[in-house]
Amino acid sequence: MDGKRILLVEDELLPALDTGDVLTECGYTVVGPALSVSQALPLLDQPLDAAVLDVLLGSETVWPVADALQRRGVPFVLLTGMLSEMPPAYRSAPILGKPVHYEALRHAIRMLIGPAANPISDHAHAGADQPHVNPSRGKTPEISDG
Image 1 (cartoon, helix red, strand yellow):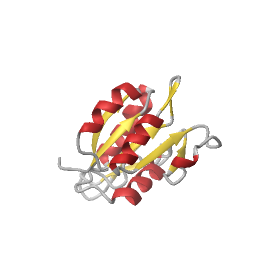
Image 2 (cartoon, rainbow, N blue to C red):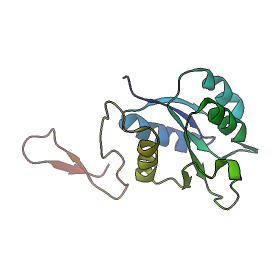
Image 3 (cartoon, helix red, strand yellow):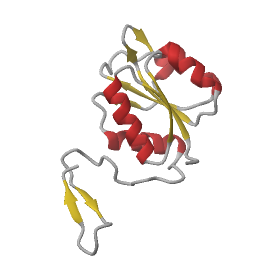
């Protein structure tokens, strides 16, 4: 897949995997996930189109990664459960609360870098309470729970 490359930095494994799946289904190539600043910084040596950054990574913040991305001109989306404590240097970045609503994340990434070249699904993870329609099952779409 020749999708746009998005660095994913998230210290919680399950949200990292879910977010990575959403980005992949949208047609982006996920770099990572990096679970810490020390895992993320070496990944900045490769071409990146954008990043999704969890603000709080255990006992550290993601600011060293955000600073390095800003120096390289790579836009990013910030994910946080603490919206009130955002340093001024990062207030121009899209900020999404946690838990992440994946439609908002897809929209924020599209606003930063445009759509992916080859999205797998335009409606991937439209919402846990939304049924998914499988158009590959003949003339009558099959509706499933997930």
